[in-house]
Image (tube, rainbow, N blue to C red; front, side, top):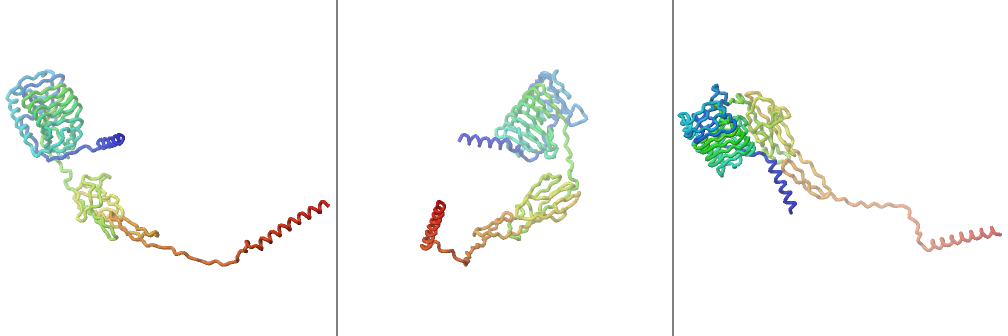
Length: 428
């Protein structure tokens, strides 16, 4: 039993390890307005403490003003410890009117993020997940990142990610946030209900809007902002890079796309019962399925694909009991070339195969499958009739009679007598 349990556990662990990374999708949001806070890489309420060598940069977005995004501010506190060890590309505002205004705008931005709906509830651990634009929270009111969190904007550089915690945000040592498919740090926001801690040598992306405090452990890097409303910001040999973020214009990847209709037609004239949806169809380019492929077959008007100009191949998975043919605008193998503005059709026809007769001389029942439906045939029983044939000819002698026995004895005695007479004559 113990061996069996170990075997089951091993299988379960293998399945868990090989499972695909979780991908969650949520509704897209508009961006959060930061106001004058947008020029600050660091903004705190009580103190700013920097140990080691910390670098605070701005202007990641390529803005002409090299100082944009690299400011440091503090209000109502005014104590910036370690300022001489900190390289700041922007301006430092300690309890002045600029810092006061930035703090007011931070409160507005924090409240905006806190009120965002609809909210998608996900697990506390974000490491190993891929998320698309939307607003997220967790059941226990905290978030943590161990490993890599991937943010996928799905081609929309204006896609907004909002993460809301009632309590803490904690990232593990060497954790990472990866941006793909036009995701941007300046469209990523973290509303933290108390404090945030960024682990040693971790890489963090986005704007942290914390109610209380923020701590960046040794070597942590940040692409975005550390904004603490009421508490302190503590730095340990970090690099914080903020920058100007414009609304991006999304180019149309298909200014004049082509339209492709793929029709699946099924003919059942020999006992088959398959329908179009039983067949799995593919549309490929360079031997790779397009985004919406594969898909189940659909009779006329078929499935409609909007595609860029190029060469494509329409095909389907093998299906027993049917012959396959192509018609319409493709060649006999399903290959088709689309130009911008084309509106073309490919029809894949499957015709059921005639069921051959079954010969079974043992009285059994034969089955042949056509498509997905077995066809049963009662076979004919053939019984062999014995054939009797008389063969005539001579008969063998009856060697078992008494006369034959007497003759045999007499012959034997004669031979013995002859031998004796011959022997006597030799001695005379």
